[in-house]
Image 1 (cartoon, rainbow, N blue to C red):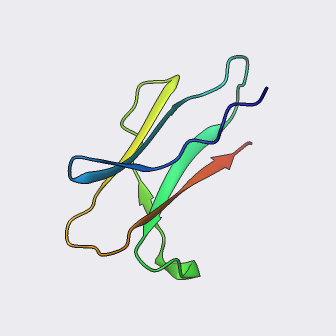
Image 2 (cartoon, one colour):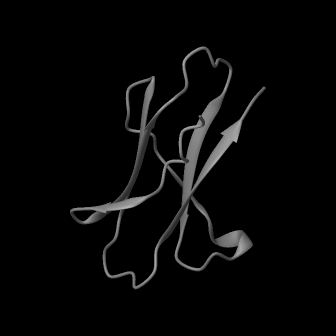
Length: 76
């Protein structure tokens, strides 16, 4: 059975997504981006503050009425 995709969740004053990379998977770069508009040019990179194999991406919610986060995955 496949694990569900990680979902951003409010945590305190931040929108946070956290996950552990799958065992046996190498050469993958995980990232995240946030936006308040969902427009193509409105996405801003989020720093990974986790310690591999754990990844944590967090964005302050601030006064944003809407805040979106998406994960990125890249292989060489």
